[in-house]
Amino acid sequence: MPRFGVTWSPGTAGLTTLRASWGIFHDWFSITTYEQTLRVDGFHQREIDVVNPPYPQLGTIEVASAPGNRYQLGAGVALPRSDRVSLGVDHRYKTVQGSLTYAHIRGAALARGLNLNAPIGGIRPNAQFGNVIEIVSDASSRQHTLQANVTANPGAMFPITSKTAPRVAFKRTTLFFNYTLGRLRNNTEGAFSIAPLGDQAFEWGPANNDVRHRMNVNVNNQIVKNLTVGLNINAASAAPYTIRTGYDDNGDLIFNDRPAGVTRNTERAAPQFTINMNVGYGWSFGKPVGGPPGIAVFAGGGAPTVQSVEQGARYRIQLFVQAQKLTNRSNYTGYSGTQTSTFFRQATAVTAMRRVESGINFSFLRRDSRRCLSWRGGRLTLGSCPLTSAEATSEC
Image (cartoon, rainbow, N blue to C red):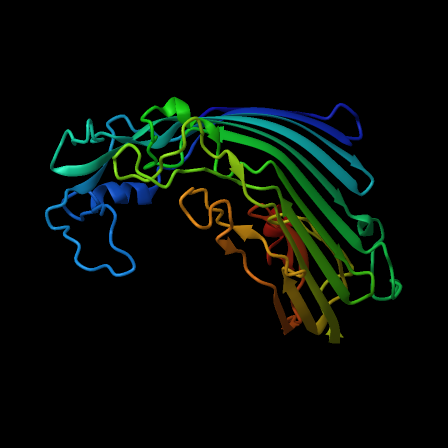
């Protein structure tokens, strides 16, 4: 699909960059959704709804003559589409770089469920089946995001070598900060989601993943030579959930009915906060091999980090300790919005507990190895150089 973008650096030094883009994107159609329409078609596999089953003793449940549900694709199902417009500005001051980006995304052709066999006056139009859920693609979404990023690499200004670097140097620190302010609204919860009132206009509301604030901070340092410490902080505001009556008010055997006048995702759960930490101490020994010492910047898959690169000794040993959820704070999830539940407005789950791991790494270099900073697959890495001069020109 068509996409256009423009980038402009107004100053000769290129310290400030302005960006704008527009594009149309299509998402894949879920293979599990397609599988459901093939498998649970009322014949190959039957799905039976049992009204008021006995509990906790199940006893005897008659399902042989009960009509089964059916799932099918609508004739006009299309791939989900999104139109994205973004504006951004980047600015660099010495070793500090910041960016601010706004994006607006309009989603269309999103999948939802349409019940073709909803009871009318308590009677199904087609007595052979229970609910006949047809997938249609007429739902939509609107998303606004404002994202700020700051990266500080003071160590990049001060090359570190084994001969000249002091034992303690506060300049060997990198910082990455990300904050996102977002708002996402839609009128569907998935390909098989049914509007309780049969009118999609009443389904418009916050999306299930509409989290207003997200923050991520990464700090990596090597203040004490050979000792690396990394700290990661993640925080997010509360996700939404929906209030439901707990009864089948419209008699379609789908228990998604809401109180009168209540729309989707009107309630908010609890905010999330996590701190992770890793500490490592390493030392090298053996005859030096490889290239000259310097600074390596690793920027793949998220927060960039700066590490000193010494003229590689043949062998290296590193001891490490890493802790997930360092403070063991309880992040509650699974809030129940069902009014008949004893857990109404309460959490029913909590994320993983604190986990601490320790270990040792041993690595070695071949005597003919050379170190090379290369860009491959969107990742800047330090590794062995290519063997040919042509490869070295293109890769390093």
